[in-house]
Length: 89
Image (tube, rainbow, N blue to C red; front, top):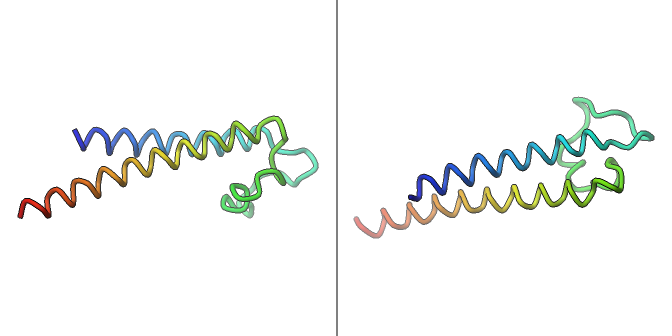
């Protein structure tokens, strides 16, 4: 059961985070230089309003927060399993 929670949280969380980047790139502001290798993902995530059009900011943030929450669920499943194994020894 914990393995299913971990894998579901991990893959869905990564999927949501990748979707957030995809939506951000699709709604890139026209007055900003286009997305390239020099563009920092961290900077885009923190300062979303500088790079993404206003109509997509809420959607990108929602996808990012949902992705992070699912990754925390996956990590929580790992920690729970580790504590469970530690307690039984």
